[in-house]
Length: 421
Image (cartoon, rainbow, N blue to C red):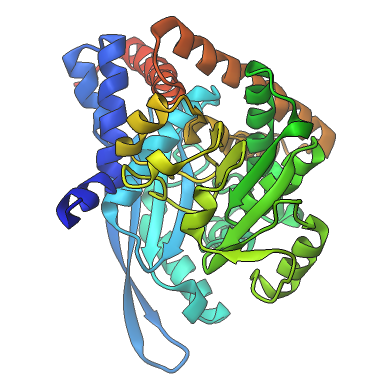
């Protein structure tokens, strides 16, 4: 495959549009509505000048895209990474629109990012970048407008700085402007585990659907961050044997099963898998092609493409990351009969509990972890069944079914609201 074709395949905004077009066609979406739902409502690019610790001034670039506000305020994370670019942010914002609609929480989709390398910045520099970014996008965010959250390269501390900056400017304490905050500042119990737990629930429901037993299954998990490690631990808790896990540098494989307690303790200390001696060393590419029952790509986008999809041996793929499979890979995976739980369903546990956090902040009343987990489980199971039912009724893949479900819900509300002007 030539480089140009590979680049086109791996453009996340084009991938989102390819799936959107298929789903919209199946739904018979009218042309005007098609144009509205395909186009982001608002995008903003901001310059973020910062005085660095050495006294020099650097200007960083930040983005915020609000894809849709039809069903409620925009919702979506902010990522800090050196490779952030506008098409990626647009795609992630659109995926958030469909994701929120699939799990039926009253949000639209948003996403933000700053081009920077958080690993190379001091805590003070990160705080300055965050606070200046908030000041620049102040007019378009808020508890009833757009509610950011952590994503790659950001965490609860960054959300605390975001919330503080916004609250200071507004002259009142407004914890509901962001989710993913520390518990002491209004964060929700169960939020850290939510995405990984949602992956497990989807896999558990997929196993039931396929008449497979968890205790007879093996799984490989790409990624050992919040989503990857917690997905692995949660899957192990229902009897699945985890045989491989990885980080950005590579992975560990042991067909007899990995010692997750040792791996968790090591990651808590070092943040890396390097130095562990509990299996053979493999690359991230090799992990994807292992002979396992369940594959959880929970690291980054575009890891399963038309170039390696034919080599995937798993029976179930549960997408812990956003966009791990390209549109070019979809057809191959479908032809191989692989049961894909798409990202806009599989990793929606995170946004579901983010919604719970926002609700708790608005009420100033907090739920127990069991209440959070029970409510999330109900929503995830209901959403899984709705997607599988849509796939059966329209004879489409789970991914296109999920898009159809999400698009139909946004389209219904857009028709009801009408076009103002």
